[in-house]
Image (cartoon, rainbow, N blue to C red; front, side, top):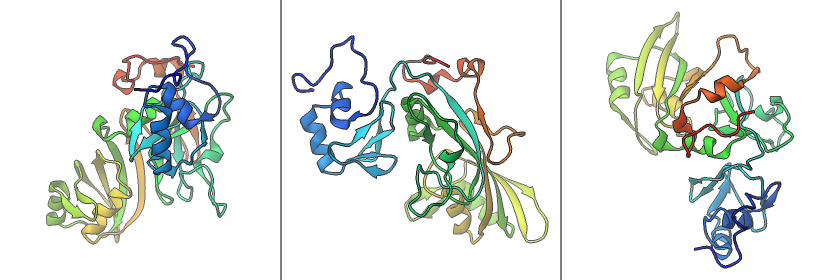
Length: 268
């Protein structure tokens, strides 16, 4: 239980603006400040893969993980729900800042007066296609958590053509360095010369999973485009580098399983 004095009054609402992580998580009832400080000292708390230091400040709604598992961190109620569909081109990093100055996906997003854009998962540097952003931390967490079972669909161009036995292996499952994996769906789309296209579907977000599955059968991926993530589809008319924000009617029509309380919160 949180130690005495660690919670704000029930009607105070969550804190707004940057706030020390131990104070924020204690307010949410995740644990006492003493417990949370111990987690931080042990390097157990991360934000977007970066280990947080004691005294670090976060924004309400930031996606946080304890021991690699997402924590529910609801945004401030005054921050409206916003969702962006971004057509990521090859040659951009899914990170806020690159130490050597390479372009990042966040450079193309509209500015926010409140809150911050949270990327739902990642696409590697050379991959293209649908990348989701939202202002709602719990929505991002539910979309990324393995228990959701949200599908990821890709169009993949590989060098060479899969043999029948390789297609069967990739559907049944193959052993990778981080465990067994498979395609939930695998469909040949044809091709010319040495390159062939495939449509694949997976329900996992493991790092470079699609590329590694093809490589396990001796085929190098030379183009990878994500066209779907859960209920969200890459618009056909959205050019590479383009952004489209969901409108109020689209937000109200979202799958309610995306939200922990079963309703769409505060659409813009």
